[in-house]
Length: 444
Ligand SMILES: [Zn+2]
Ligand SMILES: [Zn+2]
Image (tube, rainbow, N blue to C red):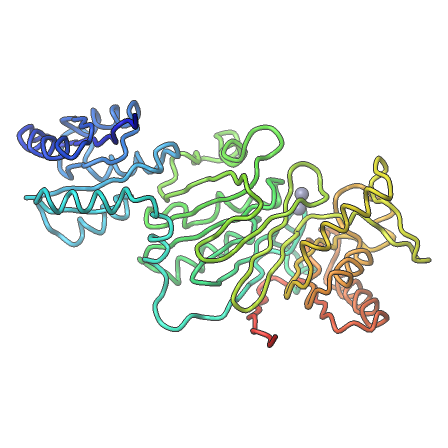
C-alpha cells in the first residue's frame, strides 16, 4: 500500500486548522498540525511533509522564517510551501516567494482552489516548470558561451596574466532557455554579480555542472552572490567525489574553520544532486558525461545545443602521448599501450565532431616530461586528440599558474602550427577570460 502524502498545517487559528484538515483528510491526505512556527518546524524536521500550509503572521517564528528554515535544509527540498495570509499586500507575496514559498494564498481559502493548487505543486515536474517560469519570452536566442575563469590550480592575478586572465575554471553557457555553468572556480564570483545585475529582482534559475571537486573548480562557490538571494535557485550536479559524497565536499569548504557562513544556512534555494547516469537532461538540453584521465572522480561534459555541441574537459591528460618522432606511449606508467589506446578511443568518440572543445592543455612538451601522470595535458597531445576527433574549434584551457600571457601566446602558436602541418581546418584558440562565443548553426 502506498502511504498517504503528508500535509502540515501551521496556523495559530485552531478552527482554521480543523476546517482545512477536514478538507485535506477527505482527499486522502495525512494531516499534521502545529499552532506556531517553532512547533511547525519541529514537525517538519520529524515528518518531512510533502506540503506545508503555513500562516504568515503567527507567534514564535513567522511564516517567512519558517520558509527560510525549510529552504535551508537540503533534505526538505521536495517539500512544497504554501504561505497563507489574511492580508493581500504585494510586498508580502513577493517576500514570501523570496523566502522560498512556492505559492501565496489569501484567506479565506476556497477548498477547491487549495486542492487544485496542491495537485499542481505536487505533480513532480517542478524543476522544469520553474525553469519555464523564468525563461525569457520572445525569439529563442542562439547558444552562447562565456569564459569567466580559464586558469588551473590557483588564481593568478598580476600584470603577467591580464590578457588571458587569472581566475580559475568557470564557463557560462546560455542555450535552450537554460543557464548552465561549467565548474565553480573563482570566475564564478564575477559571473554571479553579472547575473544578479541582469535578473535584478526576478527569479534566477541556474544549473552548475561540476567536473570534479578539486579546489580550483569549487572555490568560487562561497562567493557566488546568488546563493545569498532567496529568489535564486541553484542546482548543482556532479558525480560523487572519492569518499565523502558531493554534498559533504561542498559543505566542507564552508565549515567554520574556512568560511563564516555554513552552506546549510545559505538563503538561496540550493539543490545538490549526485549524478548516477552519464546521460541526463538539463531542461530541454541533452547532456552527457564521460570520465577524464585525472586523479579522483573527474568527468567532462558534452552539451548539445540547437546550434552545435560544446564539450568541456577542464582537467584531463590524454591517455596517449606522441613523441617528436611520432611514436606513441601510454601516459600512465601502470597501464599498457593497449589499454591507453582503448581509453583514448572512447574519449575520441565522446568528443567526436564537437563544434567547440574546451580542453586541458596545461603544459608544453618540455614541462610535460616532468609532469607525466599528473592528470593534465600536453599541448601537442591535446591538439592531436582534437584533430583525430574532427573537432571544429579547440580552446586550450586550464592554463598553468606559472604561464604568463606571452607563454600562452607561444603555446597557441605552436598548437596552430601542428594544425597547419596536418592541413586541418580546425580552429585553435587559447581560452581567454571575458571572451564570448556565439554558436552559429552550420549547414548539414
Ligand atoms: Zn583543475
Ligand atoms: Zn583537478
